[in-house]
Image (cartoon, rainbow over all chains, first blue to last red; front, side, top):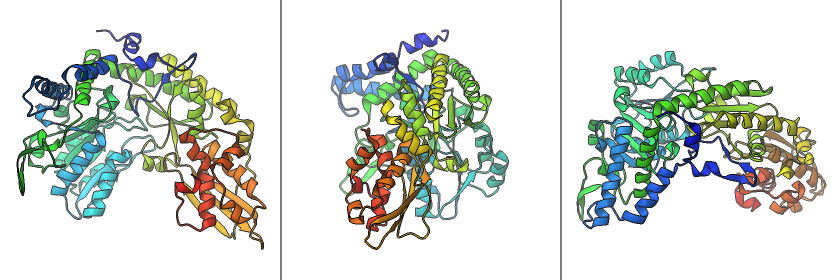
Length: 408
Length: 131
């Protein structure tokens, strides 16, 4: 199938709307959350219209169907990331909960005072705060792979940190601010040589290019449905089977048990051991449909399209006097362009762009330490996905000139 | 919407009259908006009748937050502290001449929150001060 962006845009109802009469939406905020194609919306609606029931244990037709749909979605997700088995795909609420699951279940079993966890300076708060909390509770040590001026990880310092025998290396596959795509395979290989377990935050990578957990040899991968054309409220933790098997349950309740006595319980097998209570069933179905949709379009085609748009955007933005871009050049970068405009606060940039229907994000994008490192309180961020066009980039550039006129 | 960036706001943002730090001062407080990183620190001096004689702010943030700080301080010079304690959300919105959505409201009200927390001598600036 050839990649036709106009055909793709027709799949996304939101992209057809106007934010005000005569002002079509220019959605450049996919890094925060992606828009949803009709196929996902229909799959979820169809589930509620036809098969809605609680999963597992029910023997009636609807319960059978709901269970089958919920588990089929798990298999689609497993194929999407090339997991050896769908029992290694744990449904969570989002990336954040997936990371917390590792922090609560794996880390609280394996880490004690003085143990080292290596993170990076470009982490989202979701891969910082769970480890801060563990550091306060357990006295584990945190070290950070520095970010260079050009927005790349300083791997030389990483190699030195590895000599301190870390227990865990947890890092983002792609920065949600700088757009940097980190060399995950190399980072993981080096971590394993040092005897560390690895956790990859795939919130920004899994939606945008092919991520193969077996090729990466990663121990844990966390990601969210809503950034990959799926619904909010569901995410995934992938883990290696032996690690997941040995981990204690995270949340207790229904569905995660094999047997409950008044004073004891036996946990269920994988993946149900980690899925307490009635899960987000329709959302799982929606995530399965999103995997199908992205696979049909082709992850390599999506990555190539985004690369073209990003390279064009960086080139156009660079031409604007007063614009400063953050992060590496297009070759090391996913579809993110974070920038500041001299003399104008990012909030004001975003607000004025909104007049023309242009949706960008302004703030520290849940990466406050990274902004502190670059000595800026906030940035404006335009981000791109499979439905983004060069015309939208042109509108962004025109909009920034308009901002400059206001504040000129 | 164009109203949001009325000349008066851009003017107070670019050329504030009350930017600075009073040393010594009678009252001081600083706070941030955790969502967008806007930061404002206000220092005040009062006269023997407990009226505001001088005021200054420093910090960084969007045009709305910085302009509203400048307008607010301009408006309280000569006012008794007791009156400053009772200023509310509508007072700031009247100064700005704007009707704001929930996100930008936080930007506009940060300076009032900081001012009141300082005058009341609180160790923190809860949102309830401006609601």
